[in-house]
Length: 79
Image 1: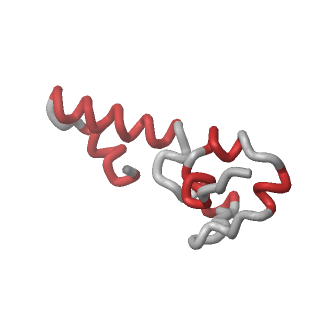
Image 2 (image 1 turned 120 degrees about the vertical axis):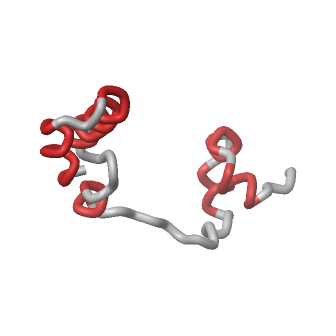
Image 3 (image 1 turned 180 degrees about the vertical axis):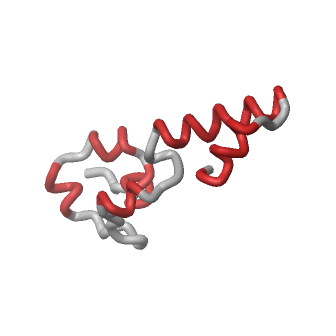
C-alpha cells in the first residue's frame, strides 16, 4: 500500500478523486476546516448581482472614454 499525501489530497482534485472512500475517510480534515457561505452572504459579494455590476462597469468605461455625462453621474452613486 502506498503512502497517501494529505496535503496533496486537500489541494489536488484529480488526486483526491483517484482515492477510494476508505482512503479519503482515513485522511485528516483540512486545517482551515470546512467553509460554507450562506446564500445571503453570497448575494453580498461584488459582482454577484450580474446585471447591476455590468451596468456600473459599462457606465465607468463610457465615462472614462467619452467624458462624464449626466447619465454617468446618475449611475455613479450606485456603483
